[in-house]
Length: 174
Image 1 (cartoon, helix red, strand yellow):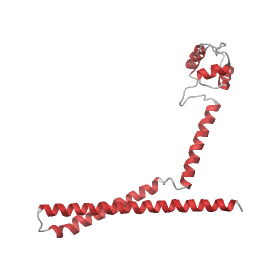
Image 2: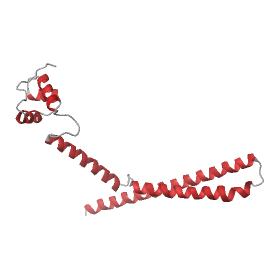
Image 3: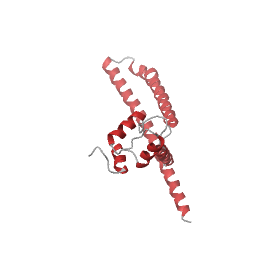
Image 4: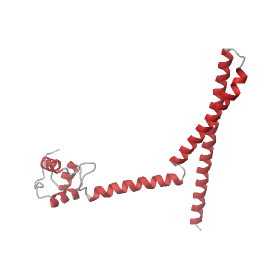
C-alpha cells in the first residue's frame, strides 16, 4: 500500500478509523496534517493520543455510542438468559452450596462419630478400612443425589418459565 492515500476513505481505512473521525480531528486540532500521507496522520494521532483504546479524555461520540450499545446488548442478553432461567443467580448457588455443605457435615458426623464406632469396635484394620470406604461411598452417593435433585429443580423451573413464555406468546395473537 502507498504511503499516501488518494481519498479520505482510504486514509481512514489505513488509520483504522472512520472518515467522520478524521474530519472531527481536522476540525478540533489546528496542528492536524493537511496532507493525505498516512505516516503524517499516524504521527499526529500518536502525538495527540487519539484513537487509543481504554480510558481517556475526549472519546469520540461514535466510540462512546458503540460502547454504550455493546453494554446494553450485554445487559439485554443477561436479562433474557435470566428470564429463560439459563442463568442461576449467584445467591441461589451460594445458598445451595451452604445447604449441601451443612448436609454433608451432618452426614459425616453421624457416620464417623455415631454409626461407625460401634460397627468397627472389635474389627481388625482391614474391616475398619472397608467400613470407612463404604461410608465415604455412601456420602458421595448422598451428595450426588443432592446435586441431581437440585439440577432437576432448576430444570423444572426453567421448563415452567418456558411454558409461561409460550403462554404469553399465545395471548399476543388474540
